Length: 455
Image: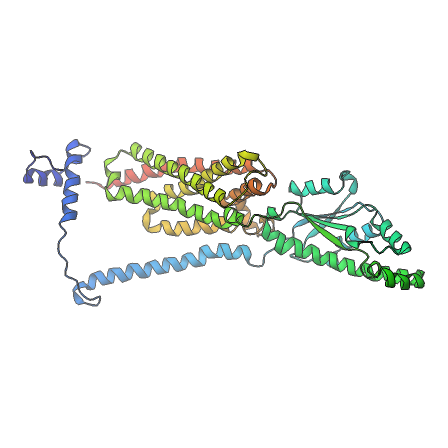
């Protein structure tokens, strides 16, 4: 409100020649802006191709076309990062172990067949033989090796598998089950896409081929040694001849929470978009009242930091509670501490992603921030679909990408995979520190440039 002691003439004079940083400037300038907004000059509305707006039309078309060109370039450049992660993937094979607890015919046959060059193709598992004496605890100790992510999968030939088959063939045991000879061990929750599209299809195809070829050799061997016994077996227990060995799958950490897809993949995009919304809300709230011009540089930096951190603190809690409302179990790995850890994880994730946007908003301005947001989403998303081990070398940056670390920590909390939460938090905190340093520096730089252009 304009003080009664200030006349219209003095008001106009004060608005045209303000004293920089003075109290009078603060009291006078804002009412003038408000008065100008309340009394806009009338505009005659015309058709788009009216000659009266030729210059305006040219400027509009030029800006729109340049924007489309920029977006076209962004599509070809940014989208190529995501397309490249899937193009010809995988470029390398995942690692797998073969452990022969049998130490007899079946064990040696399976081990040599899996590790032979004739069965290895791109997109399949790269199997290596590991001595059985490294796992005296048998299958469970081997499963722990996969749970700790030392390898992606393991094929275990059980102890006594060959002896059980021989005994079943001699006694014509109708209760013999060839699937007890071999176990395929893997962890789906580590990366469900890798498990469903790479590990399981590759391992099952290889083991099925091995089982069929072994059955042929075993039938020939039995027919040559004892034809009468083969005839009797085909009558009483034909599967001993037709399917002497098979396998079972042991999924040690199944991806059994479907809604977790939102927390480990798609939801990360939503989290980043929410972070960007806060950046926009903060920007427009200051812009509408020209708050940036009234605050000192220190106050402006403090305001941006406090409002952003406070907003992310609250919204990350809402995000965590929303997941809890859909019955996501956070107690598998850390008990009742799982929920607050998940909350703090998303808070750190929003800070890591959002503070980077807040920092660059000053430098890139609102015009170019959507382009960076697109780039930021794609670069993060590209390294969370498939394991980085099967992607081109370019995507090794993913180990320090916020989405990658958010996804891995969430999998640990929800499914009980390997505990890398400390490392994941460390990466996110580094991103936060970088943004906390860059935001003030960029703000100071832009403020100095702005002040230098003022008369």
